[in-house]
Length: 351
Image (tube, rainbow, N blue to C red; front, top):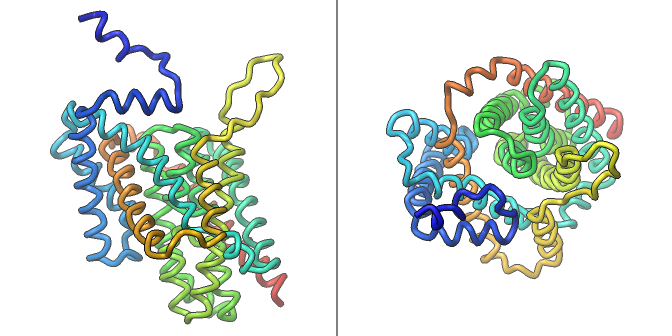
């Protein structure tokens, strides 16, 4: 019995294809956890549609349902392998498929001024948030999650960034919750602020796309001001999402250990980032039929909800509360900076 159990407990299993092989050889042991996370994902999507997807994002609902299940029903041991698989491997597949939401044509449609605003505000917000996190003495991995989620695209960016920095379940849950909360607040007050600032439909759309967290929140906010605002906001937001590629590469480099006195290692680009880039390029040539693309993106929402349901199931609220209020302050300051710097640049470049 000892000989047969040794391969399962060996800590030296390499990443990549052999890790996939490890999951596959577990066979039916994955099924209970995958069934549980799938059921929670279905419930989250149904609740999101019933409440209105712009009111409460299904990704956040999936996290909350997972947490609720763990702390009421519990997480049976047979479910753990499948939950871990959903939280790690299903998550990476979902990040890859996000590439079908983008094309280079959409990015270029924002125009040079819009791209300047998107790149400058996103990059400055990301690195300012990292600096503020150090100043507030927040752990680096949680800081990176909040920085990416605020500056790029909310919960989806948190999911993608976590695949690089490999933070704890509690860090990821905290990041998703705070970022979704401030994004929802933005959705409610932006129409009032846009009217007070006398923004045109075009500039209001660019502001929404450049500074609101979630894609759904951007669409809901901008279309309140008409079709022109909504369309420009959507394109601007998709251009902003593309910045997840260089930021993930940067984070991958920062989180790669280097030996003292040795040459820096080559930048370790995560394999799923390469596939993500490949899908963006493929989508740019319009070779994927619209029907298939719609099916894949709809299915991908389910995969994202599965992975975040698994995150909730692995989250311990007792440990989460020990993180305190500082991450909320960080997320709030980061959001305010992004909103103000993008609005300032719009006034400078468009007037």
